[in-house]
Amino acid sequence: MNRPSLEKRETFAAWSFCALPLSFLLLFLVTPFIIAFVISFTDQRLITNPNLPTQFIAFRNFLRLFNSPSFHQALLNTFIFAVFVVPLQTFLALVLAVLVNQKLRFINLFRTIYFSPVVTTMVVVSIIWYFFYNPGEGLINHMISFISFGKLGPYSWLKDTTLALPSIMILSIWQGVGFQMVIYLAGLQGIPNELYEAGRVDGANTWQQFWQITIPQLRNTTIFVIISTTILAFKLFTQVWVMTMGGPQGATKTIILLLYEEGFKMLRVGYASAIGVLFFLIVLAVSLIQRIYLKEERAVT
Amino acid sequence: MFVSSIKNNETQIIRDMSSISAFIPYGELGLKNYFDVFKQMPFGRFMFNSVFIVGSTVLTGLILNSMIAYALARLRFRGRGFILSFIIALIIIPTEAVVIPLLLMVNRIGWLDSYQVQIVPFIVDAFSIFLFYQFFVGLPKSLDEAAKIDGASPFQVYWKIIVPLSKPVFATVATLQFLFRWGDFLWPLMVTRGYEYRPLPVAIQQFFSQDPKVWGDIFAFASMVTIPSLIIFLLFQKWFIHSVASSGIKG
Image 1 (cartoon, each protein chain N blue to C red):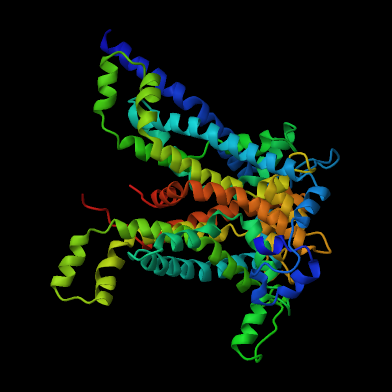
Image 2 (image 1 turned 120 degrees about the vertical axis):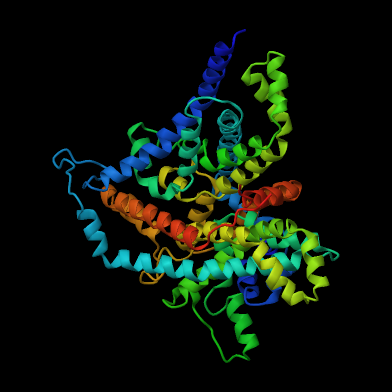
């Protein structure tokens, strides 16, 4: 057994391990990604008409998008959704994680309860909340009128242009917060106890310990939570599809909903691909900006 | 939801909707709503579809994703660095951005309305590869060296040494993938036309969107969609929590 043949054998083995997964990635992710870029510059339709060959139309799809009121609306709704949901969900996840991190009886039960919405399929969650939001008779209206002694309500949550998007925000946070809570829990349990002991010796109270020790130590966790929640928020589709179909009057139309409608219902594949390309660029830009602003501190180990 | 699903009287469900009694099982209880669901549609078929699609995607994915991750983490070869950077770069591409061209492609090869169209494109997942890679890199190098001196081939090292030592990461990737795939909605909505290959999320959404809404039946359906994943969650709770936690730990 001489050296080069061993190395050759290892290289051959490595490539045979990589071949199949790589070809899957190239076929089902890279290829459609490239096609998306290519056909976003054409007027391709899902069912091609032999009399109307697909043509290269340069930036016309993008220009039409930038001038389209429904795209503006979808973009604005998606951004508003993200701007509210990301900070709220991150903050709530941290609060819940700190609460659940106590050593109390039944704490595991609470963990399970907070996490159970995460394993409930989003479609089912949307249906249950639709029932809660029922205009007039629904549980949420009833609770509000009970608390406000009948002064407020009843609201028709999902039929009201100003309330529909916030309604969807609430159930999205409710469904997703358990996931982030668990990530924070892992972060909390990774903080060395000596830090808190040192803090106590220096006379820091619980509140100061939280601000001076816990928050800075959770920096990397927070960055991960913020970036992943943002990407998820931009993908908003299922809840809207089940509850409002983008209505009332487009108040809950999102980028992905528009992409679905254009590509799948209107069969304007080129135009829908342009939305897909823009969606990718938005996600990429937001992630990069967040990465630059929230520089990770490399843990010194 | 579970409580409402066993109330036989539809008007009572609507009446209870506005108060705390929605959470209290009383009145005429029974499984009538469940029988209704089975009568109205092939529920068993939807359940089988979902289990089969998610099961095949996750299991095949475990093998393929861990194999490439093993090669990248434990073998020395030319092009390794490039492939690794390439895969990490792919994590950022959301499925939603490529869903339209992917639809064109599967339409071209006649895959619409089938099992494979819901399985094959999602078997290999860049993020899963990344999780495997991180775990494999952390295993001590001496393991491979010793086996190599004994004349084991790279595949034997993977199968006999790495896999048995990596149960935690396999469980992690399996639970995370199960969670994501079980809730998939956009893609199956696009590629399934009839009952035959339709998975649960799409089936329940279609049922829910029919008017008039029979809430008892809807809740019975929703309960049956939720119970399997809830059971799996309660059985593997430790892994679920662990998997989510470790997805947040980055090198």
